[in-house]
Structures are given as C-alpha cells and as structure tokens.
Image (cartoon, rainbow, N blue to C red):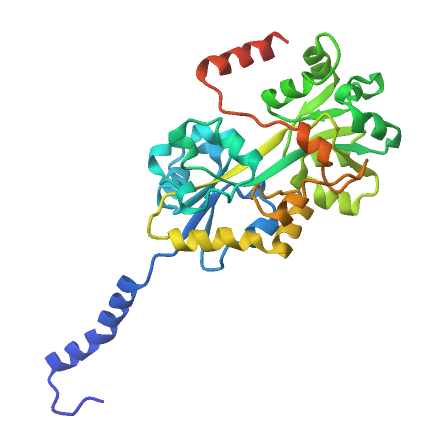
Length: 330
C-alpha cells in the first residue's frame, strides 16, 4: 500500500486513520435506550415486548441507598415501578408522560387511580399493568366455594398456622376489613404461618401449608404444572398492584410511544393476561379480560371480583403513622 519512498512520518499519519475512524464511529453512534425495573416483579411476557435494542437494567428499589442502583436510575431513559415503591423515587427527575398519549388511552379504573395522586405525580405516571392478588389453595377443594364467596374463610380453625400472607401490613389490614368478625386483624395475623410474597409458592408447595395469598403473575406457572393448586378470587374483591412507566428522556418519546402501541396487539394482550398481568388501557379487547363471568375459575378474577377489588392510593406521613400504630397494636 505504501510506496518505498514514504517517510516514517507519512506512515505514522496513515496508521492514525483507522483509529480516527473508530473514534468517530463511537462518537456518532446513538446511545442505547435503557429501561430500569425490578426484574423479579415482571412476567416474562412483558419483558419480551421490550425492543431488542433496549438495554434492560435490573434494579432493587429496596436498596436505593447503594450507588449502583442510583447510577442505574440516573442513567436510565425509562423506569418501571409498582405503587408500593413510589416513595423511593424523585418525581422531579422525570418528564410529563401522559401528554404523549390521547386522553382515551387509559381505562376508567386507571384514570380514577391516577386521580388519587398529586398532580405533579400523576402527570408523570403512565399505568401499564395491574396485577390482582390470588388466593391459592392446595389440596382442599372443600374450601373453594367459601373462598370464592367471602374472605371470612381465612379464619377457619383448620387453617390456623397454615396461611401464608403478603409481606405488606397495608394489604393484610385491607383484607381483614373484609372479614366479618370482631378483631379481624388480630385473628387473621394469628392464623398466619409467615408473611412473604416472593417465596410464598415455595413454602406452599413444599410444606403442609394450605393457603397462600400471592400476586397472580407469580403463581401462574405453578398452576399449570401442579394439580394440587387452585386459584380463587373472592367475589368481595382482591387487592391490586399497579405498575407504572416513568420517562426521563425527551429525545426518545417516539420510541416510547411505539412500544406502548405494541400492547394493542391481541396476541400480546392474551399472553400478558395468561401470565396474570392485565393492561389498564381503553382497548376493547383488553377490557374483555375484566369481564369473565365463570364462577370458580383459575383463569383470573371474575367481573364481579374486579368490580369489588381495591387499590392503594399514596399515603401521607400522618396516615402512614396511623397504619403502623394499628398494625403494631394488633
């Protein structure tokens, strides 16, 4: 390539060209879009909807004090979070998001829930999923009818020490209010063997425990392989977990919109619902997933159960102290 009479200086100049080309390519290549979320809280069918070009960052909101998690959040374009961790984020770091979509994108339930937040929060939150809690019963078909009709079945004497309750005191207290008995919270806590969400199914399957109350998407795969298990959704309603998307990047708005539009596909709606994840969008096909009328089914809450189910609006400091005192006193 180089002539014999090329000088050493000319040779060195030529050798710089590949390096300059490489540096220039790196400089102009677009930054990879990143999205942060706590991976164990999301079904695989939702993760599969994410574009292959996006970088997925697993983050534990319980450990935000660690620099690694803070760095992931600060460098992420988008963040997924559930309503239980709202106090872990700084809303000032995020852009308004609801203005990117038509007003009719969300269904009535999600709009009503957003209204429970302060305006500076609700404008930055896009609901993308709602997950019901399910009552999982093992090897006790005689409990199914009672469980389907009322939460009172949890105080059955034969269930003493055989119930696995959620880890959240607020959820347990909300269930106790549905039970028609004096001192229902004290009695419900006395029935429990332990309080756990993430490991509840392992405890239920591998011990003599009978009942577990668990987020539905965490149990779907077990229901498909273990014939001893049955899912019940009481007609009195169940607690709901909400999942939100937050946006930190203005430049990627169109890519964000394209991703949200992908949830309009019927195959995607079916796959998510089959894994216990329901879309809160005003899409007629999505809305049909809330209208199951079959009694005693393991395919999701019935229409009447959805109508009676409840969400958890944000707590102010005073309300939080009140709940903590009630829990401790019980």
